[in-house]
Length: 316
Image 1 (cartoon, rainbow, N blue to C red):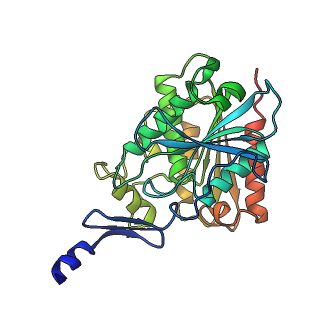
Image 2: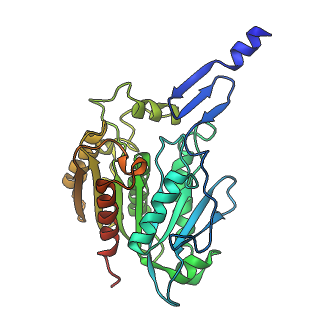
Image 3: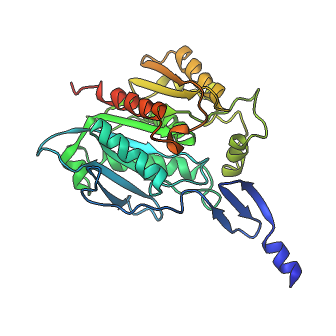
């Protein structure tokens, strides 16, 4: 009995204080599964939310946000948000991400779709990327008044679609914009901008045993490693074909993966991509500081800068 108990409790992977996986297949997530915020119409902060199933793909859902007060016929920019968490944790429904996206919706006056892509190890990469693409296609399916979600049909301006994500979500943003550039989008739909907030990318020369790199190897067991073009922009032939017109990258001075964000910036800048690229660095802060200290002055400045990025692009 003791040997059975020992084998079932043996840890295979852990990224404390957020995650632990056991050799018997059990997974314990300590971030993204607690402190869940239910959807609400006309909440106290003036934002309405609802949860939706996407294309009947089992386990692929999203939370949709919009300002509670909006004029009939008014068209708002659309933000598709991809949360961080190394592909193995995080959720649009936990307070951290719910509050962050709701604050962005309130500040920028936009419609938002926060994607609940399926997580590793139960659903290893590339599932997270594929779910993210399916979700983007679901959003786009509402162009011209089609699609099942009334808020998107009635209020979304599909000439002003923005992709936003933090950490591995920033990496997803790149991959979605790159795929859009290669495969194209429905006529009349435009990804106006992409914002990568302290994104995770790999660098062969500095890859190591840090939690971010271990997370990638854990979440994508079939990867070639740190030369995988999905995580190493220097190896990604799609960079020059990025399917948006503007890119904004946020870095944090004391972030362990700050250099990877700089690599992305330099790679994109040299690639021949013809869009506009800007980089903004927050001094003295660590990785995703704005999520865990959202009311500090620097987090509020980041929020306002991102809202400005979305709103500077007007329909033409």
